Length: 178
Image (cartoon, rainbow, N blue to C red; front, top):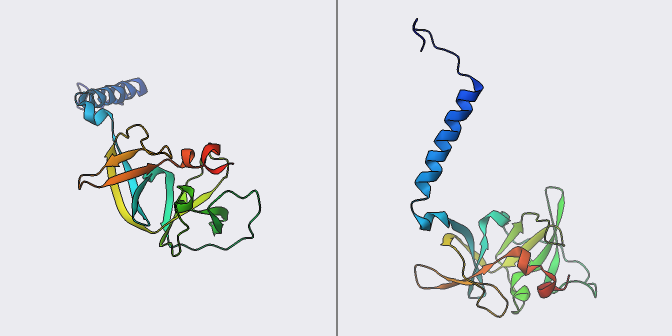
């Protein structure tokens, strides 16, 4: 307030300075605990014929019932392709996650994950089939890959082990040949 009791307009520079000061205080407060610096990653937990897997929640657009249209198999088609699914005007290639990880084809998938489009994945829009989804879990940092497929394992608080699936790695040429 000014001397005459009226409010003074706040200049843009003053406002920007206050916002930057508040942001700096907030960031400094976070820096005191290194565990929070390595923020937890939320994963969608999946069951894959008895194997626990997790996909980064930020890579998942939608979790839905498994619906797809079969398509003729071409010789150059990557392993695990089950068909296609249309969602909001986009066509998704539907993959059996079990086959992609070297397992047997799922007879009755119970859930389908539509993945967000990522420029590093050469196939475009992708959907993954799994046996079931079991909610989400936060995992702080992921260790180096320990499995032959190159996907890291993390321990859950209840003692179970979870394979962390990175969609970009899953669809690299090393794994699916595209």
